[in-house]
Length: 165
Image (cartoon, rainbow, N blue to C red):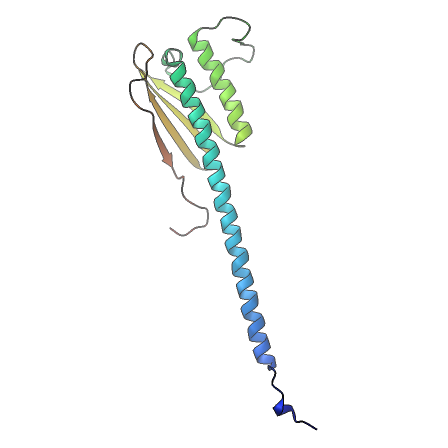
């Protein structure tokens, strides 16, 4: 009868160590996948905000005269205004554009907000979401022509929640 010492197997301690290492590797993988998912969600939100900001900057550029008449535009026009059925001034069209943009922003990025602030010949378009913000600056001349390139400024955008800097 062969003795137990001649068998080539693993001991209980070795088996427990192997199980512990496997569990540790699996837990690390799950943690990294969670962080990757958070980073992907943050990147998606940033992309959506940048697209919405770009849309509003284009609208301000296209209707510079209407936006220049406002000192600050934070509230949309009354819901009854409809420039497709009746003529509107450039300023009324700017208010309607803002209302539509704010609705589209809320649909695309729940919890987000945006506004346009114009002083003299410069408008700042801002988008805020989840503790982050993004701004675009549009400078227009007195005749409504674009005088300076559009600049964008991002605040807190590359940070991944829970990541160590």
